[in-house]
Length: 319
Image 1 (cartoon, rainbow, N blue to C red):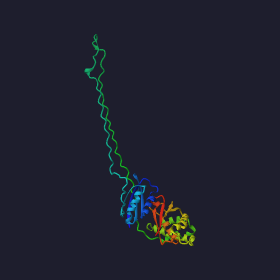
Image 2: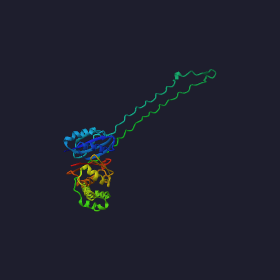
Image 3: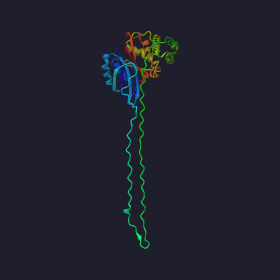
């Protein structure tokens, strides 16, 4: 198995993660995490995926056929600070100086008639004084010169850099906090989200997902025992259609098709980077595991609205 980092550029954001996630799942890879960022060039998408090394060519072919992507790059994923996105707008340390406009030349002084060209003066012979006298020569002042200097263009504001991925050392569930959150499950159900949000904020960050997963498993097991204990073994699609989808609709607005469960407006996934989909994963495990004929279920996140997607999407397959 290998981990790859996908950097892609798209012109639109709506539904982008879902569309690309479908291409990734269809190629045999699973999505580990994703990040969206707005840029002057468009939407910058970064994804980390995991899958068989032999499927890399199929992944590249699927992404190349995806009409949502303008361009993309795939490279082995490396721990550490995130790499700059290849399609991010470039910024300059120093502004580019605009050329100065041409300086207008001063107008040439107007030439006045010289003394030699002055017309003759009429003289009164009796008085020997001129009757008409030429006007005195006027001095012409040169017009002042104006130089218009354009101020230098300020450097453009740097594009916001994507937040780095922060990996926490995963811890086990906080069993006491889960027990306290589900203490009144029978009377609170299906209004369980207020207590789950309290659980989300009360446990250590590294124990969030494990605690929500355990809360989901216990809730799903309780619902199965209450409503579906007499159900015979079923295939996966039939089990989701008869049990999983109806039970989930009591909690959230959902839609299921082609092995993918779409969860809209999840109240557990409203913060940036704080996905609460682990609860839904555990809920489906506890609800379907007793009745599904296959030995195990595989449920993983395709995308989550806490990472910028329009809705949360879970892929459900037989293990």
